[in-house]
Amino acid sequence: MPYFCNVEEVFGNRKIIHVDMDAFYASVEQMDNPELKGKPLAVGGGGKRGVVSAASYEARVFGVRSAMPGFKAKKLCPDLIFVRPRFDRYKEISSQIRKIFFEFTDLVEPLSLDEAYLDVTENKKGNPSATLIAKEIRQRIFDEVGLTASAGISINKFVAKVASDYNKPNGQKTVNPEEVIDFLEALDVKKFYGVGKVTQTKMYQMGIYTGKDLKSKSEEFLIQHFGKSGAHYYRIVRGTHLSEVKPDRERKSLAAEQTFNENIASEIYMLERLESIAEELQKRLKNNKVSGRTVTLKIRYSDFTLQTRSKTLPYFVNDAAILLETAKELLYQDKMKDSVRLLGISLSNLNTGKKDTKKKEEVEIIQLRFDF
Image (cartoon, rainbow, N blue to C red; front, top):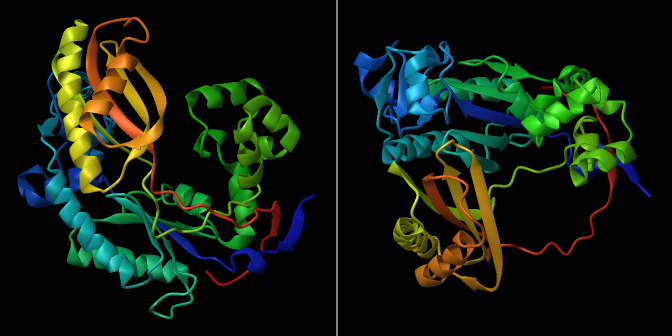
């Protein structure tokens, strides 16, 4: 039986900002090397084995996107300039940006080096307007770091994240409480969390194109056709996304992988590569002082299709020898369908979880109006 309550009883009149840096890696490279400004730029490899990690807005005009093979990006944009990634530099800049965030609130949840959620419901500046806070944060980042950022502002993380894409680059959008439902109903379903290409196609085939279409379906219908995700879709399209901004967001997994200069067809050569990958993963696990139970082998074939194979162990591990032995078992679990261009090992089900002893209840939210 659902529990009905006032939104304030659950999380108060929340004001959430999602800050997303504009083409972060590429923008850092253009900032550090003025000769690259205004030119189509890709961070990553441009050879036949390379992959685009990030693209400048000048490159995106030609259709260049992250995760795209370098040779394809070059075909789309012959004048594309490739630069090698400098993750130490990106981490340095990201740290400067986060210091700015913490001047406004301690409730900061980083999603990656270039984006984060901020809960500014109660903030250190005593400013009641989340819209003005977002504007000030973006201006501070530009003045002190030299980069532009975009932001979305709303009552929950989901709506704020979607809104941050609306006026990119160097813009922001506020979705006020009374606007949330209309905003969600007009949204293309591909914008909803968990709706990938396969689910998007399935929804389109069912005549579900927008949030309004999605909202017209019962929770039972959505669960029947989309499993547990159906209940998630049912809630978020009604603006009842309750996830709080968690500054101590726990790491879910750690991984190491390698892309090869030439495709590998021999399993013997694959085992040699897996040994060094397992050693690198062990180093990362010990640096982070964590262990895990679920080992996943990642295989990307020469045609760019991806396959994963997993095994959960009865104990926590962080030792390279055990990681390698498990990855070896997974490698031989099934025949390889083609030559391989990338191998990776990840460890999840980490020993960082905190058990929540509080009983969770179903909640239906009534949105309240408040100043944004």
